[in-house]
Length: 244
Image (tube, rainbow, N blue to C red; front, side, top):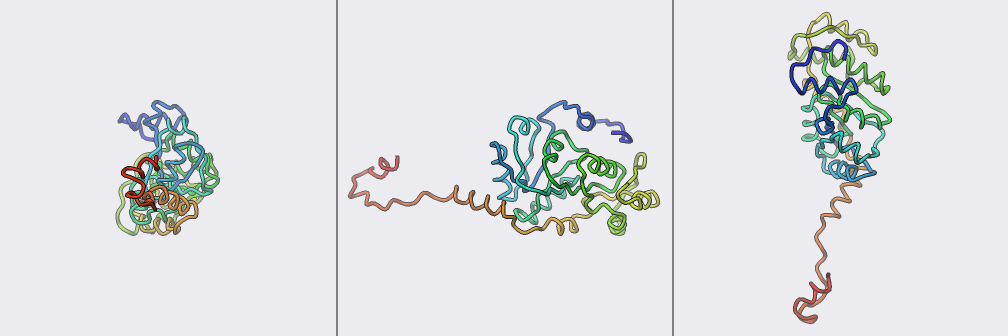
């Protein structure tokens, strides 16, 4: 990606290749999601079951290409740092709005999944790479920035936990004041500093799709009814033979 720092690790190099549309390993290309029900294949069933439990689920590109799914949601929120998704799972569980985590620059698996959502609300770190990723998401998907305005940045900066901005500056066309404020302060704010605020946005109660999945999962785990017969009257072992 133009303006990105030169990768120095294997994982970073792979991420950069994927960002350019070259898939090096369809198992290493992954996307982390929470409460994203789907249908159309066994993978869709796994996603729906994990959503019913409010459990994070990691999907590989290999799974997405060999077991295509159809998302059962209209809107999907996207964050950059897994700490946000982890906190959402712990605090909100099945009541969290559908959420995907890019874990940095979006992978091929991430794009394969997110391209299905009718509406994406996207955010990242308040650093130059974060601005570039959100800009790319707007251009590719028509995504709406999520808590990525100048006021959001200044409020996060006021909390006092920031670090020096690194790399070449980027623009924020959706809010030109954001990039200007970042250049003025010279400070980056990582996404996890906003977790309490983001959890408020993600707290959507228990969605209907998740409630239905929970009922189905509960029914599947229900114990087998006890026989309404007298084994003594039927003869030893008769219930086992009848139930087979």
